[in-house]
Image 1 (cartoon, one colour):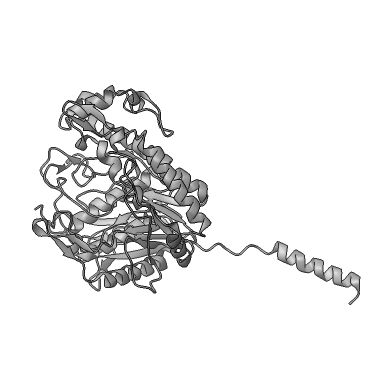
Image 2: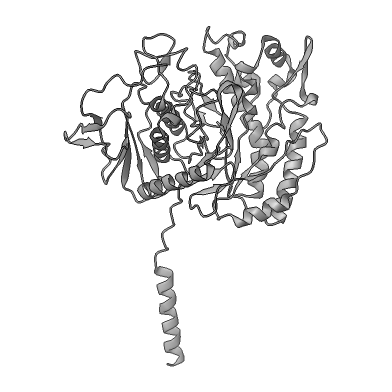
Length: 490
């Protein structure tokens, strides 16, 4: 072959390479990041890496060695390296240097002027050394609940008055407007009187925005600078302002405190005072009200209802963001046993996982603790943790086989009725096909397709099934026969 022919062949080969379409990107799978260790060999369940300790800005804190954490991070699969910033959960609020005087005592403040720079400096040093040691991280997650300590439930009149009188109340900080600006128009004298007005909901929303901004400034900002492709979230951080779902105590509390990139609702299935202090709203059964005739009740189906209601509200507030829900072990019956119904029927727990996957979950943050609350203040060890991890891996295998990984978008994020006997949630998969999950109250064994009249019997003891189709028409199912009253409130 002469030189001219060789050059022509080379040019043709290069053109073929250039003009070939790129290989399709692999759609990310839905998986589980576990709080504690899990057995090796699970495809969809991987443990978190802890930045351990309890950093207190005014204390003499033991140092932390980033090298073992960096080494462990390199051993985890790419895309599933989760760093839990546990060390700083109690660093920002409560430091003596940031407290103010009220008659007879000192109280905490939300501003963290002394605490934040100290904690942030140590965190930045850790990140620098972690990266220098070859550390890899894909997700930064928090289980920090301290941001809520300035909600109305943790304040008294003296502390609220002192906060309002502090000059920092009018000071913008951490990229956030001042608390004065955030609470403008709220009758602050009514914040501690939830029976009187909705001022307490507006205060809690405002203070959550401020403390969320503080955490994003102190923890998320430095981490994102060090690892630009990082994703992240914090326990109960969410944007939920359009028809907010009730919390376990029934308060329909709006929220706007996302940390990092993703909402992180707590899908534990808890029904606490929502069962005793509220009724299903007779005028709008997607809401709770102080007056009515029918309670929400407690039980496995009610736990599923309140969790799906929460997931839908979070999806409405963040349609373009993946979700990182916190989930508990299926044995978890609540901080006081009986508040969560999932242990009575784990099928409802598994349905919750399926619905959240269609609501945009990309990773579940699993609190696979070693012990759970028992009766009379006791704790009960979990003795089948490895089996629970294997179960979780199996359900994620099923979910990914159906959804094709993280869904592209959700179909149906409207509120559901608390009287519902059937729940239908849908999504568009990465391949453009539509998929729905249909779940029925456990006592209902057959459903009728409202469009075709076809009867679908729930076989094999399951309480739900998948529906896949190319068109966007949502399936509609009702009980095949009028359902019995179902679980009564208790």
